[in-house]
Image (cartoon, rainbow, N blue to C red; front, side):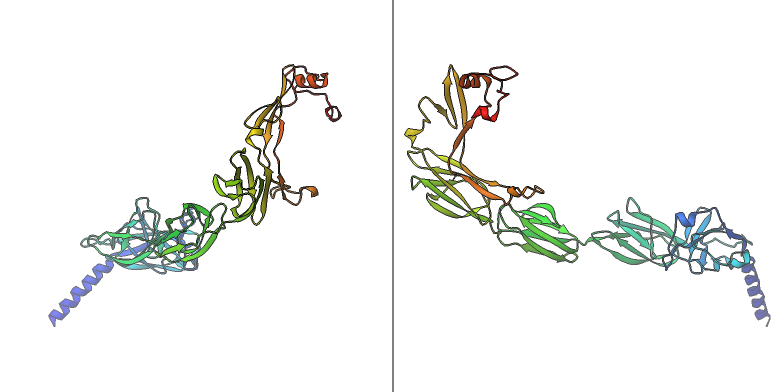
Length: 449
C-alpha cells in the first residue's frame, strides 16, 4: 500500500512539474501598419489572401494548430502563421510546455480578416529540464532544370537560381512537386526527423516530342506553325499539342499537315513530291527548225507549243546555224500560254544599214560634221500590262492584267537629244542653258515632229 501511495505521489509531482512549465499569452492585437499579409500573401482554399499572425516566442520547435495554410515560416525571433479569414482560435504547442489555446475574442479580435497582419506575444515560464527539441528539421532538395518550380506541402516556394531548396519543417511526412515547361512533372514524399536529412535529387525528364520531316522534292523550305525552321529533311523537338507543318518551294504548290503530338512521342512526317505550277510557251520563229533553248537547256525546235513550263521568268534563246541568235525574257503564268514569234537574221545581213556601225546590242548612226546618234536594241518579248495586285484603286483602263508580246526588236536613243545633235538636224538651238552636250530644251511636241 505504501508503494502504491509513493508512486501516486511521484506521478503527481511529475505532472505538477510539467505543467509548471507553461506558455502564457502576453498580448494579441491587429498590427495596423504592418502590410506583410499583402506584400507576401498566401492563398486559402477559396483563392483568397490569408491573414498573417506573427508569433513572438523565444523557443524553437513551437508547433501550431487550427486551420493553418501551408508551412509555418520560422523567422528570426518569430514564427509566421498564415490562416484563412474567419478563424477565431490558434493552438500553440511545445514538447516541454503545456499548450495554450489563443481565443482571439479574448483580446478584442472577433475573427481574422483577409490581408491583415496580427501580432501574438507568448512567454514561456517555469524551469525546463533536459534539452529542448526544436520540433523540426531541414529538408534539402536539388532540382534539374534549375528554373523548375518547387512546391512543398502544396505551397509554391520562392524561386532559386541554383536549383537548391532548403527550409525547416515540422517532424513528420511532407510532399514535394517539381514542375517545368517542356518537362514531365514529378511528385514525391519525404520524412523530417531529428537525424541528418538525406538530400533529395529530382531530375525532370523532357516531355518534348521528336518530329522528323522529309520531302522527295529537293531544296524545299520547311515551316512549323508559320515559322521557318530551315530546309527539309529536318528533325526537331516540339511541345505536345497541335502543330501545322508546311513545305514550300517557289514555282511549286505547297503542302500542309496538321499533327497532334503527345509527350515524348516520336513521329515521322513524309510529304509527297510537290507539284510544279506550270504554263505554256508558244514559239513561232523562222526559219523553221530553229533550236529553242529555255534557261540554257534545249527543249525543241520552232514552230511549236511547249507545254509544262514552270511559272516565272525564263531566258528563251532561238538559234540556228548561219543565223544570229535571238534572246528573250519571258514570264510564264499559271495555265496561260506566252507567245514568241519572229524571224532570225542571217549572219550576212547583220549590218543594220549602209554607213551604220554596230557592236553587240548598240548601233551608231552618223548624221554629219562628226555628230552621230547612239542607239541600243530593245529585245522583243512578253510582259504583263495592267495594275498588279499591290496597286490599290487603279483606273479602269489599267484592268484587267494581261500579257503583251512585242514580236520584233527595236532601237531607241541611248542618250537624251543633245543641243549639238538638235542644231545639226534642225538648224537652230532654242535652249536657255547652252552647251553642246546638254539636253535640248524649250522645244514642243510639234517641234519634234
